[in-house]
Structures are given as C-alpha cells and as structure tokens.
Amino acid sequence: MSGIVFIISAPSGSGKTTLTNELRQLVPNLEFSISYTTRAPRGSEQNGREYFFISGPQFQQMIKSGDFLEYAEVFGNCYGTAQRFLAEAQARGNDLLLDIDVQGAAQVKRKIPQAVSIFVLPPSREVLQWRLKRRSQAEGVHDPEVIERRLQMAAKEIENYSHYDYIVVNDRLEQSTDELKAIVLSERLRHSGADLSAQGKLLETAEHCRLRNALPRIQDILASFNVPASPEGKGINA
Image 1 (cartoon, rainbow, N blue to C red):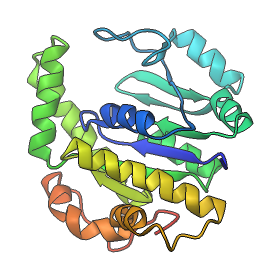
Image 2: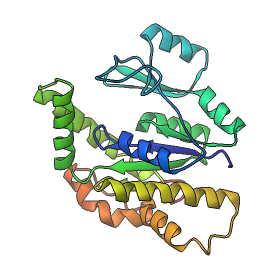
Image 3: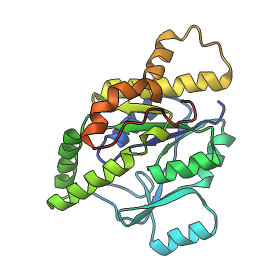
Image 4: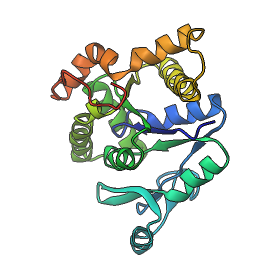
C-alpha cells in the first residue's frame, strides 16, 4: 500500500454514508476516519462508531492543539478529522478514506495535493428532496424549512464539483459502489507503478467517472440545482 488519501464529499442525503460503508466491506486495507463533531447523536448513533461526539470547548481545544487535519462548521455544528488517523494508516501501510464536506476537502487538498477526491451527486434535485424528506421524518423533523435549507446548502456544495477528480452519481447503489471500488483500485495500481494494460474493465469504469468524462452525463443534474457546468474541470487529475 502507498498510503493514498481518498476524499469523498456529497450533499446531505446523497447516500454517501451507505456508499462508504459498502466500499469498506469490499476493499481491503482501506481505513476509515471517524470524524469528531459537536452535534448531538441522532437516532441509534453511537460515540466512536458514526462520530466522536464532543463538546464545543473540547473541539476548540483540539483546534488549538493542532489535532485536526481538517475541520469545518456546518449548520452551526463543528466537524473535524484528527491528524492521528492519517499517521496511523500510513504506519500500517494502509490507505485512508475521508468522508468530509467541501470545506474540509479543500483543506486536505491544500495539505495533501495528491489526495484523490470523489464527489457524489444525487440523480436530481427532486430525488434529493425526497431523500431529505424521508430522513427528516425519521429524525422526527417535519419542518419544510429544514428541508429547503438543506437543499440550498446542497446546491452550494455541488457548485464545488469541478474541484474533484471523480464524479459518482448515486442512482443505483450497486453500480455506484462498483464505480467507487474501481476508482480506489485503479488509483492504487497507478500509485504502485503497475502495468495497467491488463486492467481494461477496471480502468474503463474508473475513467468513466473521471471529471472530464462525467461532465456530459451530469449536465441535467447540475441544471436541476441551477449550478452552471464548468467547461473544464479543476481536479488535479483532470
């Protein structure tokens, strides 16, 4: 293993957590960084499983101590990735998977330019609205303004899509998982210097998701969020 950092970002409700859980079951030697957050646990969430739940003062102390690789504030709550996860993964010769928002992704890219970034898109604004409505109902939240605020935030996050190396549209779980797996495995092969000529299907699937190749397929999705399509991607591998 070469200690690759994989970043996955997506608007709330895009199914990113389900995708990352599936990916972790399929790909060995891929460690996952559990974020720290100041928000309260939801539903069946447990400390140390979904997040490390800490107080605001504790979070601020970690910032002062330089404990975070990245951190950001989202909807009034703070989220951060501890530096130690990267160090521990590298010490074991494993790759690290970061499930972080666009603010955190930008911070990591500045510190680790070679990190591989993947943005997960919902199939449309309508589908995302439906998913957010279901999530809100499960959380006991029935305020339409909450859903609208999350949709507006989603549009702002999607505006950053062109800064990512790969785009995955989470329409069908099995296909999306296969695409994520192909991206991770193909990047491992590239970093190892292995001969890629025999990896036809794997590379084809990964290249299908590379930003420049995904642009024609995501025009309608971007339009549904009123996000203009960028003529050229800005990802490091674009």
